[in-house]
Length: 333
Image (cartoon, rainbow, N blue to C red; front, side, top):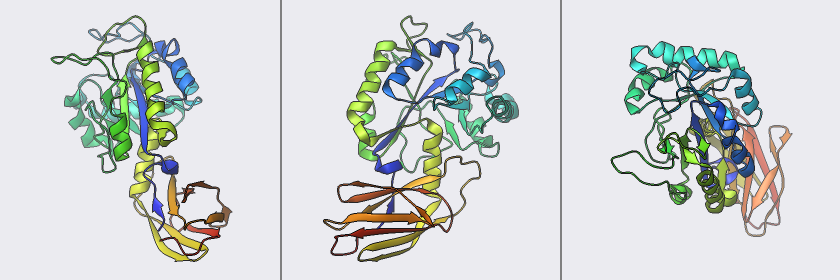
């Protein structure tokens, strides 16, 4: 029977990296490493200080410049995404409309694209106030600072986001593990979301930054463990995929020798989902080869891995899909 894949093209797990504050310093060391390893990232913007020198006394990065709108759009052109890290990076419960809604509206106007991710600033004490209004204010995903992976049944308004810093905070001080969560995510079809502030050779805070060498080592381990089975993605496409998967089912499935047909049924998919695609897998009989596939009247490419066919389909309610194959003796089970 056809089945919706956990991740696009049947990949085993997803991997995302976010950068709090969206500091201009990222252009110096961090972004070139992402380009070297083919890992698109995410910028978490303190919208009230966008393009300004950071004015947050007590912050490790006080006095450093935040990216401006043009720089954010430059990174989007490279495949990165942009989310809100609040308006002020202060207490969210004091004015959630400004921190959550107004920050989104101003940021969307600045970058010319929808903003659907909110990254909780500070610690998780700020999370309840954000969660209470996030969906109503146009967000599809909210990211905490809880150390763990996300699984198929994850709460998209309370996502885990693990630190990717040189050291962990006290009282247990420890060094970063370049293999952290990778094997467990692969085993469970999980989704790793990590955060730091920048890669550097000169630390301002080892609990908020990662060394240039450690970031390279981490990305090398992601490729080593994941291979072709890891989806390197900013967080928003992963959240979109999860929502498409949750709100789509395969119906009217018919299987006869040489042909499998089914229909996509979509119910309740949020309007602000930007990327509306799903991958579907189909186990073929021994020796069978796919001859053709179509979604509606549109021919569709098919990838075949061993005895499994994979199709990437637009998420449209009522979309009919047909897969034809040859040289098989029986219909797929």
